[in-house]
Image (cartoon, rainbow, N blue to C red; front, side, top):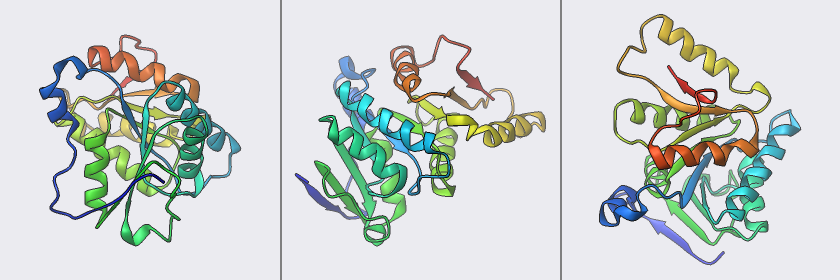
Length: 223
């Protein structure tokens, strides 16, 4: 680990939107991707394989991984794969989870924060795009929060749901049900991209970064 920072609640986050305003030429560049995923590996070995592929892909493309800072489960898989391929990794973890999730100290930047709210805000600020791999209720919460912020017009960063072996099918069906029941109304679309393979994640992000929407309707989901 090259750098470990303890960040208090009242310290300003590193806001990439402000950076984009200061340097419009970099506004659509993908320099970092936040990956939400489980602290367990799940039953299906395909989940860990996808996490490793994603970590390596980010490193190979010079894109920094932003993640929750743990060494267990899919979190550890994606981070170690990125590091093993020579990539840059920022881990952001609340102090109380340091021992429970076994913070990964091999990353080049480890930020220890006071609570979950600061963690999530800082992950948002540091990221140019978001990817949800399989995970538990925490992963679901993080994904839904970004979808909500996007729905309410608070950001236009790409969001990709990696539906490995159909893991997210029940969630996608729930969104369909919400729309059918008019809780997701016209003008309040939930915009994100669904891919089925790890190899398709980065190609799905790049069109969004360039145009703020994908031109491939086969992978773009709007609810």
